[in-house]
Amino acid sequence: MNREVTLPLIVDHRGTLQVSAADVSKLLRTMGGRWLHLVESGDDRLDEDTVAALTIELAKLADRIDVACIAHSSGTRA
Image 1 (cartoon, one colour):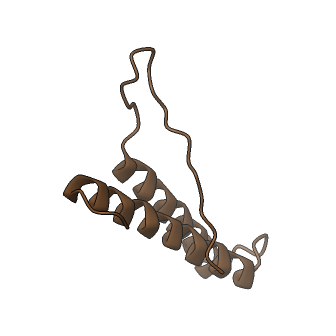
Image 2 (cartoon, rainbow, N blue to C red; image 1 turned 45 degrees about the horizontal axis):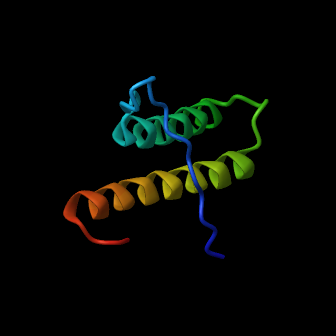
């Protein structure tokens, strides 16, 4: 299923972007990685299958952000 996600941008009063897309995609990947680390270290508060599924979806979203930014900077549409 292909669902489009729109992310609001964090801008200041002049419209200047305050959070880069690279930082957002890195954050998404880091969150998933930390959850996986907790599961691998034996944290029984987290369901392994759920963490795996969420981590995959976060990585996909991060990839989509990266692709969209690359397409935008190269003048093409993703």
